[in-house]
Length: 135
Image (cartoon, helix red, strand yellow):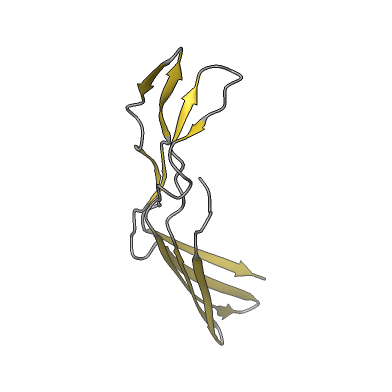
């Protein structure tokens, strides 16, 4: 997988308000290049790229994460509960696909049934809660 010609824009915003903090992370990235290739069985024969780089692209990737925390002073201890939500919009964009089209061996080409099957997707929405204690 290559990042050739993949544009990305990322924003990180933090809005501190005394003992309350709100953070936002947003990312939008063009779909990455997907290089379809033929696999050679001979040890000295290179893999062949099918088509040109950029002929196949994965879908665009969108990610939005949020974090909220508030600090409380309890005697000499500062307790800071926090909540984080990753992938707020719950995208399930395909991040990786199987790229081997097939195998060429002894003058014959056999296709690979797994070609273009999904290998990895974006993680689902996750909520993480935590408490930090400083003393």
